[in-house]
Length: 158
Image (tube, rainbow, N blue to C red; front, side, top):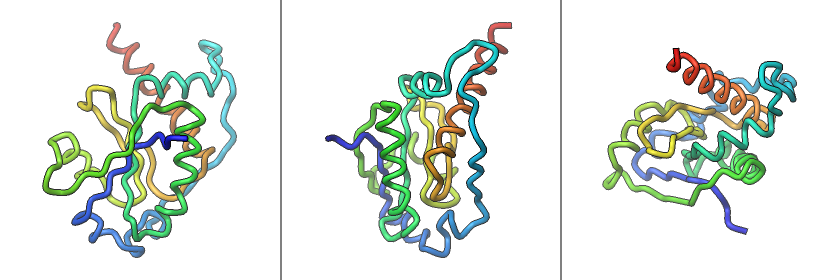
C-alpha cells in the first residue's frame, strides 16, 4: 500500500534539529480531551469534517531523520493520513532547490516533527501540529481547523 504523505527532509535544516531541539523536548503538550461526534450547528460528524478537510488540503510532515520523536510519530501520522484519505505523495526536498512556498513554511517551523496544513494552491499554510502527538490529538486539531475555516468563509460572505 502506498504511503500517503508528504515528507520533507531538509539536510542542512535537519542539522539544526537534534534530540535537544525536538518538539518533545520543548514544552508542547498533547491535550487528548474527548472530541464531539456531532456539531450541533450542522449535524456533520467529526469524521466527515476531517474527510472533507482532506479533500481540500494536504498535510506535510517535516522530520529530522535522526530525531527519535520524529521516527516514533511517523506511524501515527500515516494512520491519520490513511484513515481520512489525505491525497499526498512522498517528496524529498534539498535546501538548494526549495521553492518560495516551502521557504515560507521553513520559517514557521520551530521544532520537529511538524505537520503543516497546506491548501491545494500551496499559497496558504498553517502549522497543524508539532511534536510526537496522538491520533486523537491530530483529529482534534483537524476539527478545530474545519471550524476556523468555516468561520472564515462565513465572515467573508457577510
